[in-house]
Image (cartoon, rainbow, N blue to C red; front, side, top):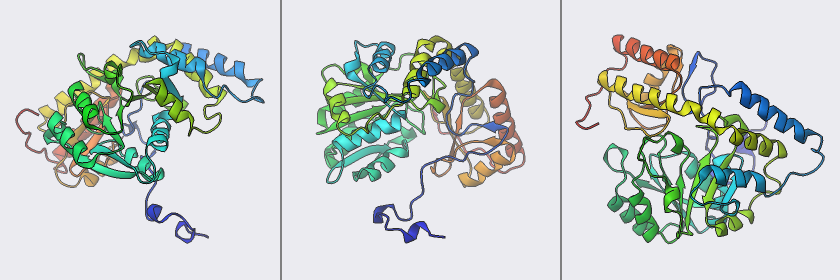
Length: 371
């Protein structure tokens, strides 16, 4: 059997592993930040009808510009956006890949503040863009001074900001976005995959868009909408940015079925987004209960919680799995991430934490004041 190493693969890809979280058949899966609630029956019926209406014409290519879908997305986002300032693709990963294809590439640099979404450096690698891992401050925050200093030092062609940030859950002060825009020589991409879960008063980067043609805000329907299997991501930006990504997008990249399903989901967004408040309640419950147990926990504006463990996080991850609960080891030493799901899933997660602590496998770390 031929091995990967025997093929003439690019040198910078040798020895690397593909992105992905374990997909295991366990009672409680809380590792990929999916919406734990199934799609409501009324939405299932609406999506089924919308998809069925496209089947007879599958011999024809779809609308390559997805104009109707983009208009629906613009209406959902508000902020005066129109279809001309919105672009859609197969998940926000493809959106960000297209942005790097258009504004990054060989001889160019992308910068992100780590720990952050681990796909960003992989997308940079795949597009031949040099990746610069900038750093966050204490408690995973990012101040204006810290952000500006690192952008000035590296002068990247693309800056990735995440709000709320994955895996920490922390939201950005809009002042950080504005300050980075003032000093960045290239594009500034704000990844808002978890924006719908942000606590009241959190300001979206969409509010900063007017007058900033180098700012891009990316979103997804995978999380709050519970549409992860539908694979639909999108961006909001100056129409010139949409013109730029169309130069690199694949022909007919969004199938007619994906467009129809996404439009039907958007038409029933009240039903789909009806679970957001319940998920936020479980997120806050997890934060409170873990802190009550003496664990250090990062503040979260997302549908997940990052919490500290004692010692090797891979051992703590395995201990959780042994109790039937799958959480995420994001490669951050001493920390694990858990998705906020249903009340029953939170019960199971907390019960596993209690059993592990009683067994002495993961004693709580002292919690610093203010966290």
